[in-house]
Amino acid sequence: MRVLVYGAGQLAQMMYLAAAPLGVIVSAVDVATETVVNPVSKKPTGVSLRNAIQNSNAITVEFEHVPEHLLLDADKSGKLFPNVASILTGADRVREKALLIKNDIPNCDHVIINHIDQLDGLVAKLGEKVIFKASRDGYDGYGQWRMSSKADLVGLREKFSLLDLEKVPLIAERMMQFDREISLVGARNKEGEIACFSLAENLHHEGQLHVSVAPITNHNDALQKKANEIFEKLASALDYVGVLAVELFQCGDELYVNEIAPRVHNSGHWTQQGCSTSQFEQHIRAVLGLPLGSTELIGVSAMVNIIGCSSFSRDLIGIHNAHLHWYGKEVRVKRKMGHINVVAKSHASLGEKLIHLTEFLPLEHFPKLVGEASRLEKS
Ligand code: ATP
Ligand code: MG
Image (tube, rainbow, N blue to C red; front, side, top):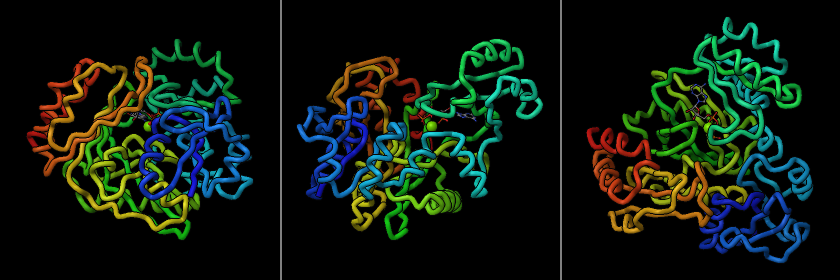
């Protein structure tokens, strides 16, 4: 069987690697050149996009910002999963908010800004601490601006007056005082069956994910159940097929949806070693109409992103149950280069292993690691 993935980055690469044991061949589409490539070598396969669509049993995406005309073209084959509406919803915060509101799912207070004059009444509506997000094409904290007091509005107004807000509105969101960020990654198949992974706890730095831990510390069934219900509501409303990630803010016992990602997700990479079935294999299973795999835990996992650096000691794989996943990209500031998964028997022993891991890494590139390791060690 064959699966065609739009987008040729690390997520397509990891889908390729997870699909191979099932006898499924994954090809990727470089959407800039519309070329079909091998997801690992990135070399053109020599097959035209038209033929690749025809030869595939399923077509999917590794990111939501695939040009719409390509999605619509792929959709004509009847083999695109998740469906176009789901992908477009994940790519556009205005659509995303509408979905959350329609399904009565708690999310952050916000105002959709499509005219600069709307900045006038904003503080009265949302307070002084506000985060502005471009409604399209943002990721890893790009396309975001923060206001910490009214005085910032002057500079922001200047910046925003250069944008075409009618074409790409901004979402102004109240800054949440959350206890922590968590995410739920799960899958839904064509029969509507759902399998959710354990909640992951996510640490960000400058708007970018650095460390995930799963299951979350102080895991409780009620919180997992609440998150699973949100997932089910969203996935069913979208008639979703494949892996879907839901980013959440936890405030006490309440969960607020930050955003959704209609694809495999960085906060689900821990499943490669920490779960019976990885999110990548699960996505391939779902889009091909194969039975979903078990989401049973193998242990307690951490996923540590390697961001903006390539010089570290590969000997880190000598740590018991530590695994390196390298994407083979050229180094750039803030670029995700790879990740390390570590599995342990408890949060405390995971903390010990992460402390050991710090010996192998240039810590200036891992600003969250030491703090998280010692927090876990004490848990
Ligand atoms: P991603 O890489 O996940 O696609 P993104 O750039 O699309 O990220 P968000 O996930 O919306 O954007 O925001 C990035 C981070 O900024 C969040 O993980 C969170 O740490 C912080 N953040 C976003 N919205 C809020 C908010 N309303 N209140 C407080 N913090 C927020
Ligand atoms: Mg996010």
